[in-house]
Each structure stands twice: as structure tokens, then as C-alpha cells.
Image (cartoon, rainbow, N blue to C red):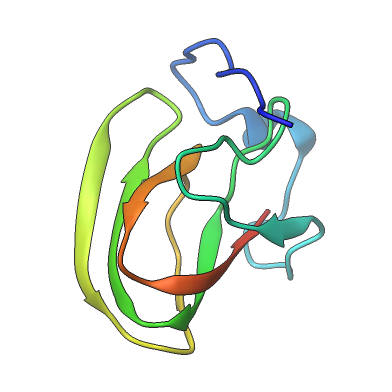
Length: 94
């Protein structure tokens, strides 16, 4: 099932859910490259099983590429989806 792109917002929607950013992830799921994580769902980190390059789209529509992300690491950035990756076995954390 393909998830529709959420409306572009100017703030992090997880902030409205009163998330403690130092707390462990309460929601998570397998990353499918090119698909949004879920309806109005935004990750605050990505676990990388097998390292490589990862391009993320932020909640305001900007993209950034992280080159050479190591296997077994957590990339602590907020994002709406992974748009491209050579890294695999990724899990979004929110």
C-alpha cells in the first residue's frame, strides 16, 4: 500500500505529540525507499543495518544526502521518508 504525501508543514508534527526527544522510540517500522513512513508519521531517527549512503526528505520537503553511514548506527535526524539509499536493512524510529 502506498502512503500519500502528507501536507507540507513548517514545524515538526511530532512536537505536538509531546514526545520526549531523549526517550526511546515509541513507534518504528521498516524503511521502504521512496515511500512515506505512514499517515502523518515522521521519524526522528533511522537505524541502519547495512551501511551506505542515505538521502532523506525532511518534513518541509528539503532533501539531504548522508554519505558513508556506518552499519549498525542510528542517524539521529527528523525525516518524512528515505528517497534514495545504498544502505539497507533500515528501520525508522519515532
